[in-house]
Amino acid sequence: MVNGYEIIDSHCHIYPEKIAEKAVSSVGDFYNIKMDGGGTAQTLLKQSEGITAHVVHSVAVSPKTVVAINDFISAECEKHGNFYGFGTMHAGFENKIEETKRMLSLGLKGVKIHPDTQEFNMDTEEMFELYDFLREEKIPLLIHCGDYRYDYSHPRRLKNILKQFPGLIAIGAHFGGWSMHDLALEYLKDENCYLDTSSSFFVTGMKRAKELIRIYGAERMVFGSDFPMWSPKEELERFMSMKLTDEENELILHKNAEKILNIKRSQNYGN
Image 1 (cartoon, rainbow, N blue to C red):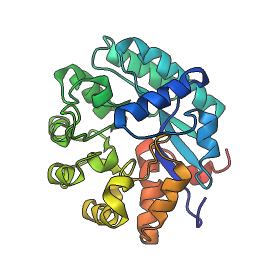
Image 2: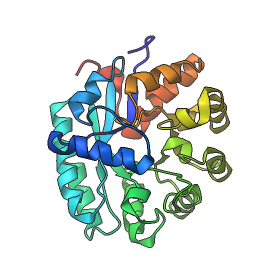
Image 3: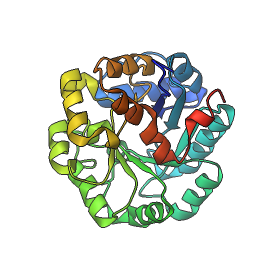
Image 4: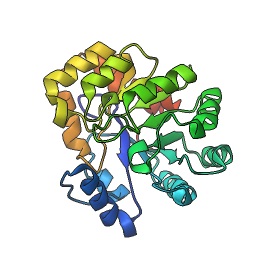
């Protein structure tokens, strides 16, 4: 805890130890950002002073890795009682509903997709069956959003999904637009979705981040570090530097995530 707040980091990538170094290097190359250190669960915990729980996931860049990644994330959550896992899915995977049911049976809490690295439009009809299932079952969907270099994850596509599947519990990562925050605001300001703070402060600066939080409303925001892109401890320090109100901090740091995950961390603290 920090300043008495329960803190859930809602956006963390982890990888098996044998491929972590290569995976982190590949992510750094994709974003042209120097990334140091490992991307394992152990490294995450070492860099997470003050953070009490983590939502962990990984991305299947091809359909053939979906099952193995879901098994890995589930196994890591079994090892660490303060981990909540999101499974992965790919537009090219044939049995999406069957695998989603399986990942849920393993205890995973939601689905994460990254349209840019997976190279499919987030609003492709190939994903509609999955989105409809997630909406019906009230399972959250975390989507990487908004890269000026690609159209796959454009915030207008998230808006399309929200219109097509009203009631879907969707979280637009990176304030809904990793490198296009103001454009994301144009499309998502009045939509029924959550947004996370991950990989945004380095672009927006803290003044604009605070403005965006108050435009969208703290009730729509969740804290995320995007580990291993950034140190969770340092991202939390940046977040706290905005000096939001206690009510805003409570919502963003844990209450909204608890609602999304259908958990109550205050009853599980220390597990």
